[in-house]
Image 1 (tube, one colour):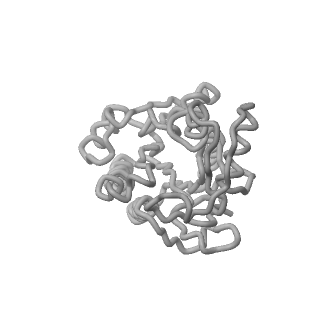
Image 2 (cartoon, one colour; image 1 turned 180 degrees about the vertical axis):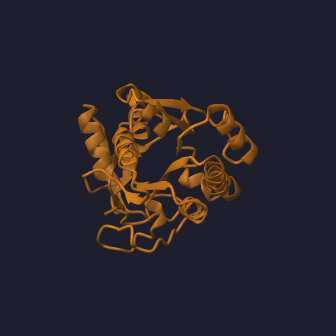
Image 3 (cartoon, one colour; image 1 turned 60 degrees about the vertical axis):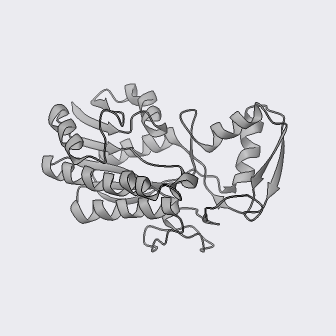
Length: 255
């Protein structure tokens, strides 16, 4: 039985993996919340690995609030960068393979065609910079890692764009959504299936995984309401019209 230790188990990705874990009977999943394993503490990482003796670690612990990261840079880097360093050090110490999730936000969005793994990252906000720093720590410390960049992750679990739209529809008859940022909505469960297929192949390295559809946030919102049979007026607006202190990539399609 292969033991997989999952950090950030109460987040969107952890819940998504838990929902399909019974489909993989040859694996034992150890789901640890941020209270049970604090990635910002090397001692906490060490203790969890000693206690559970995993073969593989899925690092789903992440600071994902793009807006708040601008004001909480130290916290964002603590989880997304230092946390990766601690997990990588611990994996190295105990000879454990690592699966780590990263983001399309490591790119600046200036390209007009899908970003490849060979393209140079250039994050334009704190969140993207913190995730890229985490990637670098893993690559510097380890060789037996899978870094999976994905984009616009949604599901029925946790905090994500889909659930935000559904929540807004409960109190509003019309909303405005940005129409000039282009990306690929990706189902969290599909990401989990992809990761499970990766570890079966044992080909370490950097990967891009995203959903098939290329669209704007506005298009995504319209499709969510249509799928849920919700009647609400959705207005397309520009990034400039959307009141946000955060710069976001205009085009972050992964290839």
